[in-house]
Image 1 (spheres, one colour):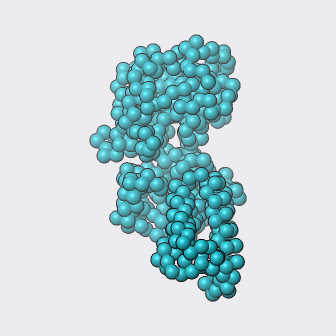
Image 2: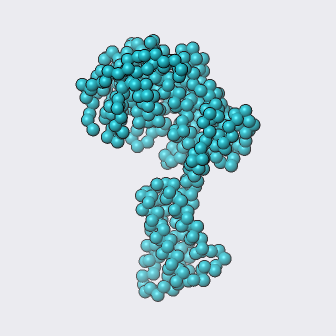
Image 3: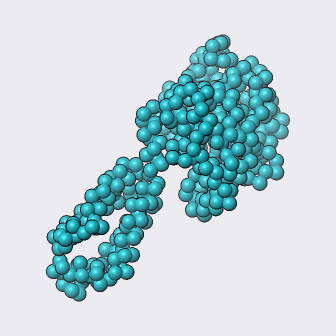
Amino acid sequence: MRSVNPGFAWPDRLATLRIDRQIRLPLLAMRVLLTGATGFVGSHILAELRQRGHEVRAVARRPEDQPQTSGVEWVRGDFTSLLSAELWQPYLVDVDAVVNAVGIIREAGGLRFEELHAQAPMALFEAARMRGVPRVVQISAAGVRPGTPFEYFSSKSRADDALLKGGAGGALVLRPSLIYGRDGQSAQLFRSLASLPVIPLVGDGSSSFRPLLVEDLAVLVANALESEAMPEGVFEVGGADALTLRELLLAVRAWLNAESDPAARSWRHGPTISVPLPLVRLAARAGDITGIGPLDSGMLGMLIESRAADIAPLRSAFAFMPRGLRKHFQEHPSSEPERWHTRLKMVRVPLRILVASIWIITPVVSLARWDFSIGLLRDSGLPEAILPVLLCLSCALEVLVAAAILVRFRVTGVGILQLAMIGFYTVFLSATSPELWLDPFGPLSKNLPLIGAVLVLMALDE
């Protein structure tokens, strides 16, 4: 894959200016530099710009993995290293507009808020100012403000301020509320919670949002770029519906149950349970330490402080008004594959833990009941001297299998190993102690559903 080519030839094509989805006016195609193009938000912005005929230079860490599409030039760029305006200069050759859609919800794997949300965007905005790029759009987040204790917000705030105070015109900061899309992580989390028999709520579930469909955010960005006079400054962005966390989860539950009438009681009433904040904070703290799970302390704090965005300025400055989530659910009912996917996704983690626990409990019990375990091996006729070694090796292997299951190491290989071990133990004990098949506690018959559980886990985790 080639690096950025300062002489990239942009086709001279006509695009379409869409003030809304009905009115269309002609406009020469723009040349847009898009960062975060492979992410959840960025990929939708890319699709919207390409649908309108604009040419996009899309930045990605691994451009060779991206599909080659007409009108899209994939270029290599890593936000963790593009921390100066000089490094951004080649990316901005022949560019009419810049859209920054890079963002992470938590720090992991060497990705840090300061670099991705602040330093790299600030360098990009300075480079755009130096080159005289007339339009720059920054995708920020609702809740960004000076002095916030949350690094997610404070890092974005520094970039927002740098863009707005940079002295160049054509600077637009969009601060969306909760972004919802069928392929988004937040949507998957809400679906999983809503599919539980009783929906858990953080505290009393009164945190409020204006869920914004990711497709509508992409339309807002494209409309802003195409406007004769692009709106400038900061705009809180959200959908038409202001929903509490409880109302949001119940709406998702009704959608999953294929209940299409938003006025129905089921959209606003259902089985919920308030989880005390100390317990939620404990779970968030565990997420801080392990990096596992959907929640950490920062995300919990942002959730607790969440308030529905004020979209009055948005209504007056933009001709397009984002839709409400309830109406979207009504117009786009859930499909059977989506319902299956949601329910199976909730099963995956508990099933992984249960299967791993079997491989942990078995060696513990085997070692605790040493004489009984050695007696089972003795019935095989193997030399007495090697029986303790075989038992210890077997227990060690089972503990390693449990660890591999929990960290999802080589899912298929470990799954095949489990099936082989279960099959071997079943055949071995059937030959040496067939009476175990008649044991009322079913020490051998339980291996049959365990095989099924392993197969299901392999399919879910692969």
